Length: 347
Image 1: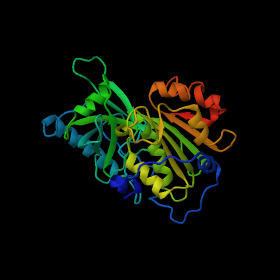
Image 2 (image 1 turned 120 degrees about the vertical axis):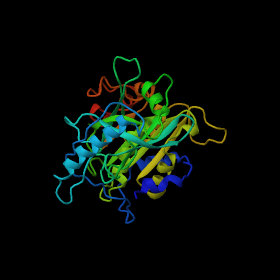
Image 3 (image 1 turned 180 degrees about the horizontal axis):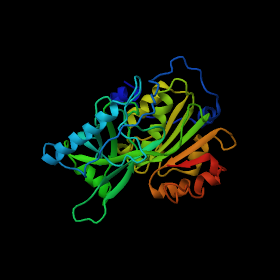
Image 4 (image 1 turned 30 degrees about the vertical axis):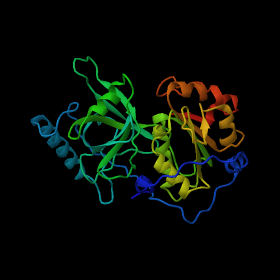
């Protein structure tokens, strides 16, 4: 069990740091902490051919049973080709195509977000995702000419066996998020991946900054899992996380656990647009002054700033991407602060 799974019941409210400590934290060297934690992430190169079967349908129907048999038959044949020690992966990319996964469990997280657990075709399979990567989801609405396809970054550990978790916020008029929130256990969703993003290796950067808004926290959390589950990775992480209300802060228990276990290597700064009266953190939007105070300085060579959030936030902080494969020009606050195109990555 990883630190992140164990942290479900732990929560500590993030207290604001004094400006003097913030700058010292952002420039101090990595700590040789003997209590480095976590599971070392397991990676394996393996192909597991899995057949997809239509978009979602209820378990127990003849169509669903036929699809399950097709998936098990394909994965069983692929498993026979594995040598000892290799890991079976549900998603192998390339020409594999879409894989139909059954929804096993739904958890209400807050007023507009849910966690969805999908079963992989076999209990000893891993998802096949790597750091950093995402998946595509697909369903075809009734009477629609084309299917709806949306990307998501799972929040489950990459080496978790038998399941894959998605954290999805429901947006007004959002066809995929609405579809997911309407799903019940037993129904199926077509998934494809992994979709490669920023390739991560241990200690690739001395210090990284994560600037996130809303569900833009999910790829940031994927990076955090890779770093803090690996005892050989001593990367320092600073997170700036903007939300509307305190209830909108997703994964706050897991993030608080990181602050407790790695106080010299992980700090989180929360910004609320509509804070409660007792809130002592930053208020309003993510500002130039806040980022200048807490982020590693651009003059430091081995740093990276990752940005992910709604279009308005992206436009203000870094500029939006032109396309999934085109990062677009660096603009906004980060450019004004002196960061270069090479120092910033937009999820």
